[in-house]
Length: 277
Image (cartoon, rainbow, N blue to C red; front, side, top):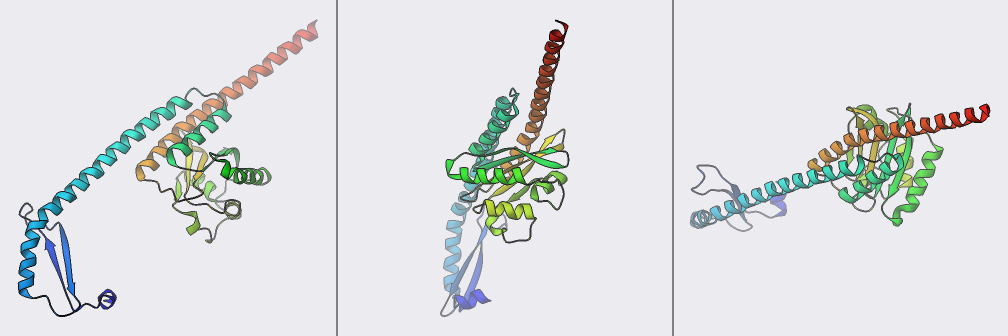
């Protein structure tokens, strides 16, 4: 009713768009109104004749749009498959944790348009922060300030601690299209401090890093300039990548542990040989 008043409508008619190829199934509607006077029966008859002419071309355009959307879905599926294979190939042979985290972070920024990536590894009842990284020198001061903050503050894995802890405990991703829309809402002290450290937060995404379906950490990624909206297909791909990442992390940690034990044994053997001389 408010719209009718704003448009100063005197008369209104809504007609179904139909053509002979579809039995009694409209493909849309046409709304006509006048600000002065009524729409006469003669005018309505002429409009009906025109609708018969234009309904089929309109329907053809709709069919074409549907085909384009399906083609885009298939193209995205092919591209996501390519990215997954490239990702697994790139990280499957990496034994260094630092190199693994660095490689993964840069690929996420390159592929998905993020500006900042933080990898949080569960260690007992709190998070470690082995990687806080950006792709641009523009955001380097933010990386430094965030790094200093988490060097000085523990992040306990508790529901009340913040969004990352919730992501880990619930084993479900969290996605905020624009951080500016939620920055003034109630939140934990850690999350509030993070907003102060990163005042230009836009799209934020947190995905559990899983090993055998169980979380072992959280990958946080965000854009810092413009919103970076993610499709359902992209989110599903990120979930797959983070599950594969979990296995890679465990393998790299095991390799590192074995190497350290090997060095300790070698040192012990060397000390024993010296003691026997």
